[in-house]
Image 1 (cartoon, rainbow, N blue to C red):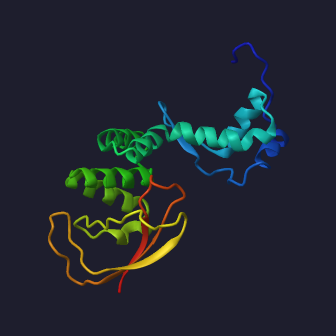
Image 2: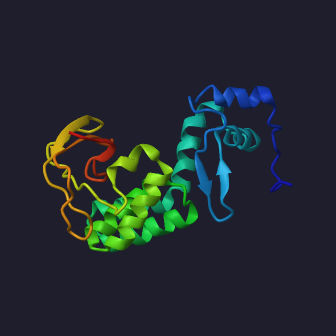
Length: 204
């Protein structure tokens, strides 16, 4: 069924022409689209683009558009966060994780925003969910939800750093034994939006 416009059949040859304009895998999940929570992949994005009469070279824009639609609340949370509006950021991140509980970045940012607002219990739970989704983050927190808070000052974008933490405490303020700790973290690509993400931790 169409809206009275002609539909171009999404043949394999036509879809391949679109896929030639992206380096994303055909089955890579791009977004989960509300309200039906449909999962979008480059392959079905390309097939729909063929039927709509798009040109193959528009594929990168189409993928980016679908990504933005799927991450609407997450992106809105980042904007509010960057402006210092923690309350609205938290509401947007909560909506993002409600729509897609498997979005680790949204879980992490929800945890950070809650932590900075003093909602420690919710922060610890969000951090635990994020670490469960991304095992490589698990060492950033112990079982009690320990958090390492870092500053943007003097950090370049998309750069890996190592540092030593001489003192650490859990969310209740209790000092942790075993210090000092050695940490390696990487900054993101957007300044003032993302805190450096701890990707690997080990004892010094």
